[in-house]
Length: 193
Image: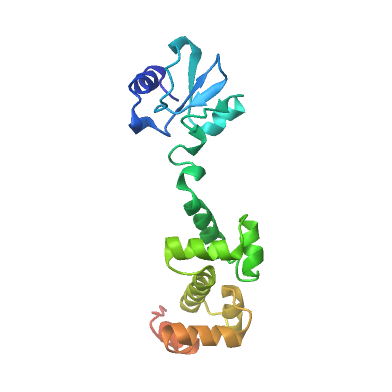
């Protein structure tokens, strides 16, 4: 719950520490602003405070054209392209790029494959395909260490389309076949009576 007096003092000071923490709505203009808005301060009896831009819009207010409250800190618009990359990362880690072409995957994010690749190179220094490959190898390594599944089950559960590709990628990454890692990790398990 927002304390009216604390929010009002921060608004009157245009305190940047509260930018993105609360939003100000003005009853007379039906506009909402950030606490740092350079516009003339409205009368205190005409304002109300909300915790998010979405709450202001749901209450029927429109964003101020001067302070652009929809781009306040911690909003998706504030983070810009980083938000798109973070969303793509979550999907890739879930395995969404394993069975999908990059163009289709990128279109789900609302952009093209070339632009997604550019964003990944800018923010992460790699490509979506490379990141998906690394995520598959990590899933496979976890399955090798923690389960007794067969190699083909591990390959498919980790997101590889074939056992041959699984073996090739694993050898490329670890410089040994997955079976060597499986044997070594099973020897390290302590068997209690």
